[in-house]
Image (cartoon, rainbow, N blue to C red; front, side):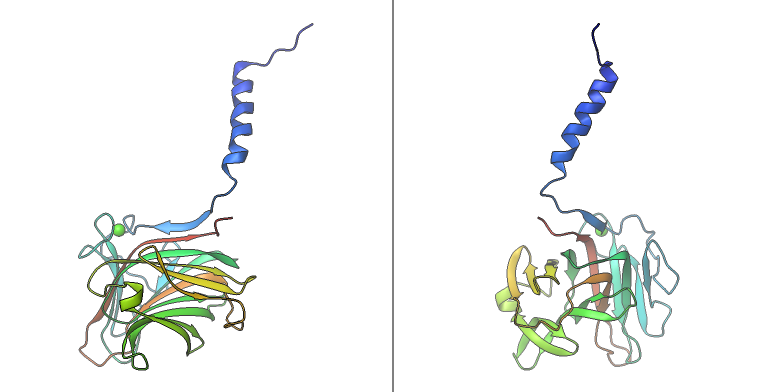
Length: 234
Ligand SMILES: [Ca+2]
């Protein structure tokens, strides 16, 4: 009596055996978008659109998909801050909390850019801000603890170009109390354990904001494209 495996069964077994090792050593993408799947003109308001909400319907803000600039494809997320009442914001809800991970987003802006990690109730855990910083006498990226600047790096060191597209990415780890910012693939600033341990490095919602409650009639704007959020590379 002999035992033989049906060819289909054999190929399924082989596929299963091969699938396991390929999962090791890779970051898992939790979310990514090139903003091409949205219609141009799609706005983000308090009504959820594919995980996104925003405040386009607030006075003095624009938060919508635009075909006027792009890092990939033909379109990107556009934000404009036009008055001193509201700051444009778009928020993506991950639907779970990452206590470590990596975020990457392409940014085109000469204005203030704020990228915030929120908890699942929408409270701010951490934030990085790009703006002119009087203390440094320069345009910088900052890591903030609440509203306090913990660390900063001037554009002359980080290579951030306010006139062109930049890939802004960061790795955060609540367990290790560590953070690392990369601009265009190059490490620009790090926060190590012991430097700012009260910052909660975890992410349930990602908020992207532009401007600083500017004066009436101003047009502070930014484009964002190619966002990805992933678990850390083991
Ligand atoms: Ca795009």
